[in-house]
Every structure is written in C-alpha cells, then in structure tokens.
Image (cartoon, rainbow, N blue to C red):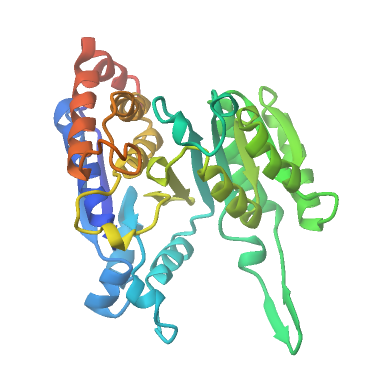
Amino acid sequence: MEGFHKHIVVLEGDGIGPEVMREAIKVMEMVNESLGLQVTYSKGLIGATAIDATGDPLPQSTLDQCEAADAILLGAIGDPKYDNNPDAPVRPEDGLLNLRKSLGLYANIRPIKIFEGVQHLSVLKEHVIQGVDFVIYRELTGGIYFNDKWTKGDVAADTCLYSVEEIKRIAKLAFEAARGRHRKLTLVDKANVLETSRLWRKTVDAMKADYPDVLVDYMFIDNAAMQVIVNPARFDVILTSNMFGDILSDEASVISGSLGLLPSASMGHSSRLYEPVHGSYPQAAGKDIANPFAMILSLAMMYRAFQLTAVSDAIVDAVNSCLKKGVATEDIFRDAPCKCSEAGDAVCFELQDKLTQSGTIPASLGSEK
C-alpha cells in the first residue's frame, strides 16, 4: 500500500523463541509481498542470549532500537541454566522487566478466544466455552508489584498505590476497545475492602459519561475468578489492576486448551510490544515442534494496532482454518502433529488464499489510516 511504512524490532529471545518468530516473519513477509506493504525489521538481543553475548539481559543497543521502532515482536524469555542458579547476578527475565519499565508499557492486553476444532482441549465443557471471546486489559506498571516493600523481623509489607492518571490511561484503552467490540466493559476490583479499588471504581464511573454507548458493570475479583470458569461467555472487555489482572489472565489462559494459541500485547504512550503468552520451553528448542500460532496471532495484534484490521482478521482466520483442518503442532493434535515450520507454511497458504479472494483485503486497506 503506497505510503505505508513501519519498522519493527524483532527480539527472538531464548528457547523456542527463534523458531516461532521465524514463522511469524514468514507470514509478515508474505503479507508485505501480497499487499505491497513496507514493514521492515531489524533484530536485537534480549534475555539469556543477550547475557551470553554481552552480560546484560537488555543491552543498551537493543533498548535504543526498541525506543525508535514502531513496534516490537518478542519470542520468548528464559533459560534453565539461570533458573537453576540462585547466585546468578542477572536473569533473562530481567531483560523483559527492564524493557517494560524503560518503555513505559503500562497496559497488558490478552485476548481469550476459542478457536474452532480445538474446543475439546479446553478444561471446561464445550457448552460452557461456546462463544467465548473476551479480552483482558491489565494495568502493568503500578499497584502492589511496583510500590514500597519492606520487611522488619517477622513483619513484611507491600504497598498498593494507584493514581487517577494511572487508572484513566488504561481505562481509556479498555473503553475504546469495548466500543469496537460488543460495547461491554467489566471492571474487576475489590472495592468492598480496598481503597485503591474504590479509586478505580470512582475513576471508571466518572469516565462512563464519555462512553455512553458502552455498558459498564462492576465485579469483585473473587466473583470474577469464578465467573471466568462457570460463565466465561458473559465477558467482553475486562479492565483490572496489575495483581488481579495477573491472576485472571493466567486463569483464563487454560480456557483455550493450549498456551500455544494465546497472543498478548503490552502498550505504552509511544511503544507497543507483542509476544505469545507461552514461555521459552527449552526442552523443545531446536526440534521444530513448537507451536507458532500464538506468535503469529501476536503479529495479527500488531497489524490491528497499525489500523490494518482486515489484515489482522485474515491472519486470525487463517489460523482458524488450519485448526479446523487439523493442521497444528503436537500440543494441539498429538496423534497427527505437524512441525513448527509446517504450521507456519500452512498459515501462509491459507492467508494467501484469503488475501487474493476477490481482492477484498487490498481494497479495504485503501480506507485504513
């Protein structure tokens, strides 16, 4: 598309990160070629590979690249040689934490969607997960994880602190997301006990007037944790604080049946990072058996943020077509799995067909911003 150019930084990371990233790049390059887009990329080091090369899990050169990029794709972080060494001065995960902090990535966005053909893998019964499609907006840089902590003898404390501005900036993202979906937002808190939760509720309540088309309801965290299991289809957009979001997103991740199907995004004022939910899975590294779908779906989230909604939808549809046809890695179809590279090829095949059908997607790109 004439005039469209974005530059992204690719952080392959550790374990299966390079393998799943290779398949996402394969998809991206096919989209570029098919639609005439200019999405270029450069690579940077992070995590264990960065420690091995430089001694730093987030080298300054990588951070400089990320600060200048339109988006960041991250594969996976983690290596057992650091996990098993309690005396390690730095750890791979420090690279991701430092990157989030340096870029001000205050919002973590995790969609939970049930794909056709894999409902049987969910820990929940099929009638319970029918139609499940919601997204969690988790505040990522504040709350109990990031404020004052102390221990004095047999007593310890963790301070939970939030400001109105911290709440408003992520609530705005959640409201706008709800407006583009099914126009329902659920604030999850513990306002019957916590002062910070009461501030969240007061702030969100005041913002409702700016979004009269969005239905807002409120739910305590204990009830929300139960509803995610017994009635997950009731949710559209969930907005919540850091700790509650950490718990809910991990709980919700089991609904889909495989971590290999779950993408995520972390957003700040000017930076956006996209990564699969799964870890580095070092036991599978180099074996061409890892599931690349979550990385590819993270790429789809990137295109959506670029306002190329039709491209994003086509990638999601291509993954769904693969699953319906029984094409997936061993975590999905254990009896007849394909390789990681074959799964990426299959997505490209399905996507090529969707990109060329009646010219619908190139035409729609013309109206995108």
